[in-house]
Length: 160
Ligand SMILES: [Cu+2]
Image 1 (cartoon, rainbow, N blue to C red):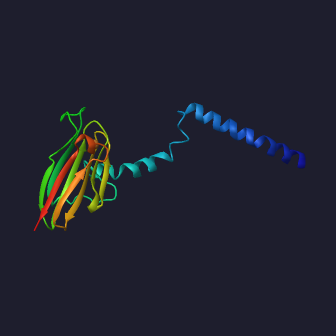
Image 2 (image 1 turned 180 degrees about the vertical axis):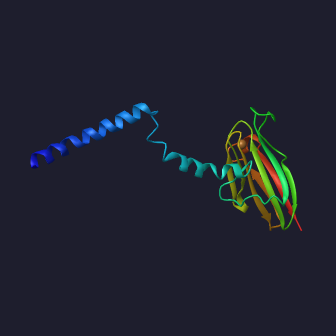
Image 3 (image 1 turned 60 degrees about the vertical axis):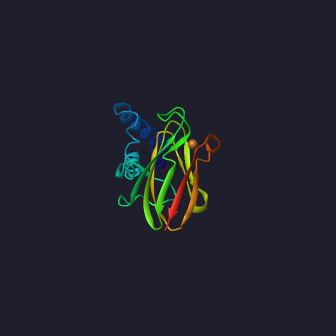
């Protein structure tokens, strides 16, 4: 009796291997992997289709109701043909809620207003958006930290 049990235990792993081998050759090679990945990928893809542009990391999502400002982060490989913010001069009223939409042309760019703690990178070809309410009156310089020396600077003026 013990010998039979022992031999069954010895052969059991082989039987499993054979069973797995049979079904994996009749299926595609991903047959055993497929039950898990789909839920993961569908979770990841959920936030993306919500809007055409993604929210910049660490900033508030665009409201869709504030002042809409679209800025192109230009570069020599893009339509603008130069390192530039287009537009580079913006004027707002104190308390104004602004939805920014930033598009990087052919390089990685950045949008930084240091005193307001606004700092986000924008990957090449990517569009990011965020909302910001300007509560402080003043003149604020915005820059691309990568291309400030190349002239990627702009000015936001907030008045009463
Ligand atoms: Cu740049």
